[in-house]
Image (cartoon, rainbow, N blue to C red; front, top):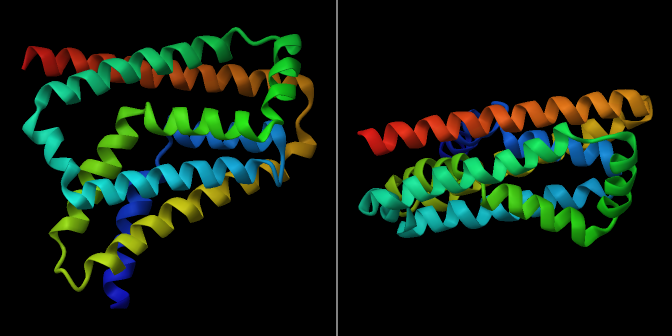
Length: 206
């Protein structure tokens, strides 16, 4: 039983730990709003991953293989969304960051933004629904809940680590450093958008 749980935990960490748009966003929330408000980003991201993993285990992952056009739509839509986020971050100034920070302090804003990044990011969907969800469904019926529990634990633990760690570093964040972090985040978002667009082109050409 422990082995099954740990296998799910390991798979979840293997997919979620590598840098991605969702991770960058959660770190940004920890730096922007601090703790405990960043905890709402953890809850929102964790709930989204939970929903996607359970959906994959229930058979939704079959849609990704049964309807190839859906994958293309996810890639193109995700590229457009990440491009928007990246441009917004790259064009940030000290004034706009103060306005955004004031808005971000609202719980609804933190939750809304986190849900958008989680559910409009095709790699997050493909990983959670396609890979983890399929892996859960492939387990013996008596082991599925344990395996899923391990994978879900990975998401919650990792997001908590990112948000709490970033919030702890917030005291060292000067306005200049915050601006540079925002612009670097924008570059990362644009880089992932370019990868998604390239993947979309390869998908169409295949």
